[in-house]
Length: 277
Image (cartoon, rainbow, N blue to C red; front, side, top):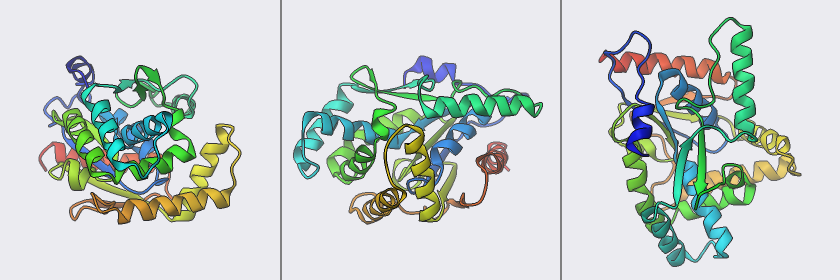
């Protein structure tokens, strides 16, 4: 993140200028709703959002595009180092206009307005575009094969090392919500607030299936569930930074709760911690 972007996002909650700006880590398996919750929480707090999983997906997309096999770990590590050191992966504020995230943001704003509340912007710290070599790949990195590829590349030690500094730099100044698989355990083990968001595999698969269908992809629920279970296994059993709940993380089950309910609960906790309570 550039210093200008950090300054632009350096907002405080209304009337709460004395609050500390914390690092909020949200970890959990695929399909738990981390993206939706992280966006909503970042916007509620006026924090910067960093989707670290999107960074790994961008690496997976780059690997796919150059034709490397997922088991060519040496070449993948070298590519990740080149992507990181050359600034070839960048994050920008604002959801892409044709993405389902943008559609969801507009729907959220409409609902808030109808309920008498303030509209919620899709930018202002909550929306994020992912660029690879200057190309907006925010939608391309969500393809099923790239999702599975992200699990493969994230297990490569050289990849994690190359991207760790990028993630830590993004959150160093506080006032940030970071979501991924190892934020509270590896990237920011000293984060002031940590959440572990999860849900039953069948529910997570149904969410993912609905998302893919909404994007016009032809998939089956059974195949989607199989992909979710494979990714769970890969993420939790990898030798480097496996997916696990940090000892001091707050467990949140999103299975039968609305995103807004979860965001409200998380925001209240962060505000309490920000006041030093």
